[in-house]
Amino acid sequence: MKFFTENLTVFKRVAFPLFVLLVLSSNIDQFLNQQVETALRNPLGATPQVYWFGFLSIISSILFPILLITTALYAMQYKKVAASLSDFYGRYINQVFIETLRTWGKTLLWGLLFILPGIWKFLEYSMVPFVVTGSQRYDEGKIDALQASAGVFRKHWFKITGILILFHLFIPLILTSLFDSYRLLWKTPVPSLVLNLLDTYLLIISTQLLFNVFQDEVKRHESHV
Image 1: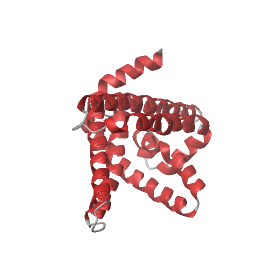
Image 2: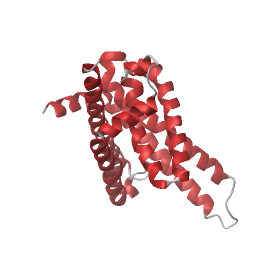
Image 3: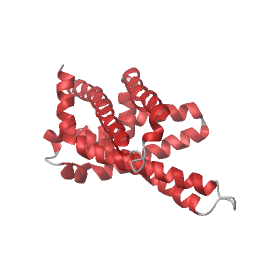
Image 4: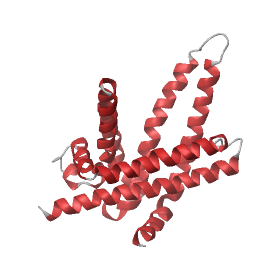
């Protein structure tokens, strides 16, 4: 009951900005994919637009997840660190961006060498945004975000992996297979908005579950200091 009470509070606090970001992210992604497919089907061959839209798609796939996770984490920590979302962005968005790029770089490196170690590294670094926004020791420069994330994951790998598989793989695959044709706002506005609202709630739940795992580890560490 306490979890759902907290979940409702978080939902009220950041549902609207998360919803807007998800609508933008989903429709920009769909639009860019359509443009790439159209360019590839060109009877004269692939045009330079393929590279341009591909580049924009990469930028979108980096930018929006950072904005989404940072916004969701604000709702869970606003009493401690920032009075408003803009203040929270001002304090943490740059570091979340930097550490996320480090995460992508190391994960890609391992992935190019070996597939399974690359997946393992991705899972290990899944808690990086939580470390950046919720660790006082990180603020003080005493720990590295990637190493701290890996430490938390190794202690709670079963919970974290289960949450990530359920909310970031299994449920999205089901929704995509059933409702992907309804995602475009300019073609099916009402179903698209409903699906994005569902995505908003699922993102809040998954972030809150991961946040609780991280907070338990922080409290456990502090009790031994």
